[in-house]
Amino acid sequence: MSKTQPARGMRDFLPADVRRREFVIGVIREVYERYGFEPLETPAVENIETLLGKYGEEGNQLIFKILKRGAHEQTGEADLALRYDLTVPLARVVAEQGERLPKFFKRYQIQPVWRADRPARGRFREFYQCDVDAIGSRSMIIEAELCAAASDALTQLGFKNFTIRLNHRQVLAGVLEKAGVPSNKHGDALIALDKLDKIGQEGVEEEFAARGIDMRAGERLLDFFAVKSIERAVQIVADGVGKTESEAFNEAMIGRLVEFVSDHEAGARGVDELRQILQFAGASAGVGARIKIDPSLARGLSYYTGAIMEINVPDLAGSLGGGGRYDNLIGMFSGRDIPACGFSLGLERIIVVMTEREMFPADLVSTAADVLVTLWDEASVMDALALARELRVGGLRVDVYPDGGDKVGKQFKYASARGVPFVAVAGPDERGRGEVSLKDMRSGEQQTVESGAAAATLREKLGLRK
Image 1 (tube, rainbow, N blue to C red):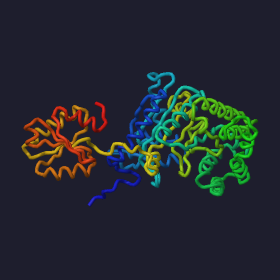
Image 2: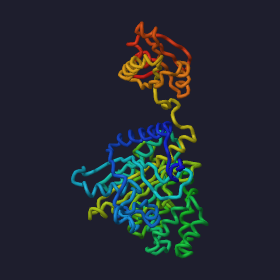
Image 3: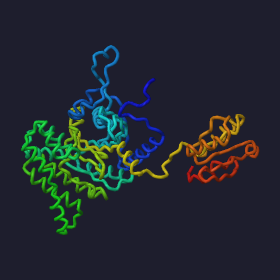
Image 4: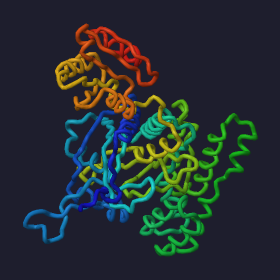
């Protein structure tokens, strides 16, 4: 007998799961469109050379490769792959379709991606990403708007306590060089630092050693990242300069970064860009107070070139989303650098957290139908189907009980088990009078109305608009 479970890291989605997913996607889509982003979709399968070399050493190992087919199958070589994320396909589209796109192309994309990762709680091999990207501008307005859009989406979903961690790849490069990490080891150091909040300082020290990073350079790095200058931030607030705690903290971190990388040209420029992002985000009500500069944030993807962001919620391992600027990625396809910046919300993790914390609306639709039309007997099938059609034209979701051999009482039990709020009965007496009996399965109340008034009556009782 064949196995009935889906492949590891893959899932079946029952109706309630799909409704929760569609609710979250609907909120995110509405927010993205409110910020002027347009929809885009790309194929599930990409040429393998499109994906390889874009995600760093760890990312390359997680790409689901598709072996050559037909006569080439025995070679074990791959020429296609399932898409790993939505950013690289976007870069390919911009390079291919650039002349048909506006000067400033703002797109959102909500589609599944696949990663050959080890499944774990909240981590799957197939999952959706909710991406929002802006192409064509180097202005830090983009970063501020992306943070605001992601913040609005989470706020509208019911998240109240979250932080947008902010850093900059060029600032990181300056810190690494000042700490004594050679340029050929920057990638190794960033991969290790990206795990700081997961494996702690000792774990990162072990990772540094395994990657051949000098112990003294590693110590200087961890000393820098461990010092958050909280005391200085609190003192600024205490001095009464009109700063909120988050503003004071960010100001203190900017000052510390300036001290550390002031004579590093790219790093100093990165600090200026961080300062601009904070300034622009302050004009977006609510989001500025959620941003916190975190010099330990690295993010593992190798295509990031500037600001990087990640959203974290207290008491939750991992993040709800992240992103950053990737000004060189599109140039890998087009031959010319095109500035770009994006943010991705992790749909799966958002749904898991919202389910566990009971954040979904209590009135979220949990049934497939508003009303079940019963069958009195086999002779009533045509009348039942006609009634169902009339109710559907009236804007209702209608299910028809398919087995006329079952007694009406059994059909009522079926409706109750499925959570259908109303049952419509048209027996011989009702049909003879041109009427329909409507039973409210929630209250037990029953009333008889004219057939032509059934749809309006049900809509009123359900609080629906036509």
